Image 1 (cartoon, rainbow, N blue to C red):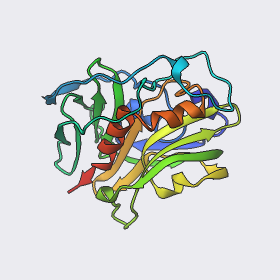
Image 2 (cartoon, rainbow, N blue to C red):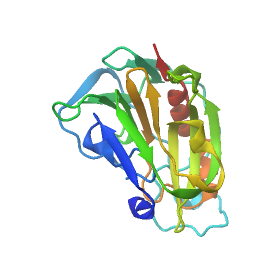
Image 3 (cartoon, one colour):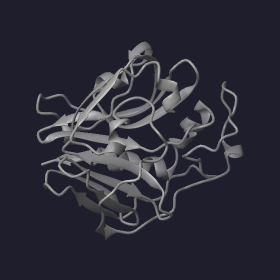
Image 4 (cartoon, rainbow, N blue to C red):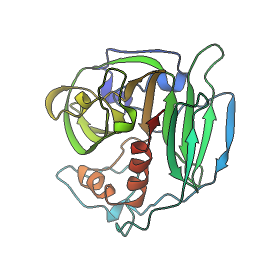
Length: 251
């Protein structure tokens, strides 16, 4: 996905966050996080199985299907099951917490020596990293114009910024002129403006202890077409990731 953004990304200034986040503050991102050093696995949480089905079962859209396998695949049945039992992860400083399915894992990754901030990486039962969150980040985003379609959005009052701005959960498709990229996480409402020429996605929001970064991991392409992305909205995997992000709370 980075190749789609080379001409547009003007700056991502990140102080106090590990190298795996420096290139991922806004705009298209790699499908898997960079290998991290000094990994400490939390003692809470186990794992669950991601919902998958062959790409051939995905609904068509106006765009031609890609031969690549998407990161998030739609299950044969889109019916949601009962809510899973949950555990709570709290970052080491005690401020930001979130709820996640008890069969998923959360591992804590320390940034390079001397840099503030802590990453929490959420994975499924097969060890697939689904989501990265970073707490205590000081950062800023700047990007070029894109065409955006918002597929889902919901207010996230638990992470209201010190200036009173209420961030939102969002799942969007952005077109950089040579194909779509997909983004999902918490963001400033300005990153959910639809249309042509809007500023590209930024998944960093201010908090009282620096900032919070959230990124759901998608490979390239994330989906073979927009119809497949919309179908993913009806899956358990999507519902669980959305619920996790909306459970984020700053105390």
